[in-house]
Image (tube, rainbow, N blue to C red; front, side, top):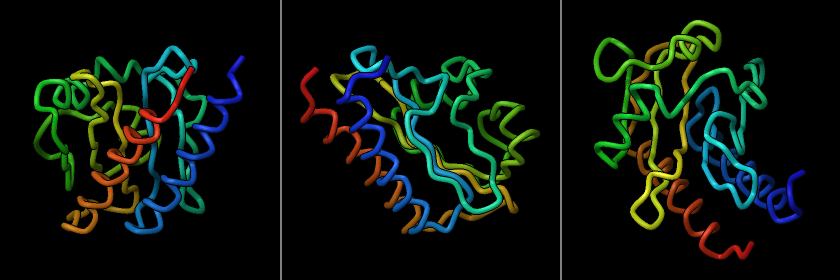
Length: 155
């Protein structure tokens, strides 16, 4: 059962992602995070914001996200992954592309104590998308805010 602090964190992160979604006008924003203190695991979203008409990924833990080529790319490169479309770069999980109809995405790493503990992702389901510099800055800011919030927590 999640702790009260875990519930507070989820609410804080949901609000953060709602702002990210508003800033970028994208289809969905998610946070995947591994932190056993709070029962967080990257195979399910810790927090999420979705545009009207888009399907939530909350509770859909059928993808091993750590094994995905995109997460492996983050592990190796430790920087923002920008995919304006899926024609090149690391392959996104098939379920993300087929079931959720994602056409473009960005993933910003959440790095704590030298570990890739998770990532903030933003998806575009309407079409391929050229992410703007403002979009890139917004998702990186969100990832930094996640790290800052977690550094203030005490299990």
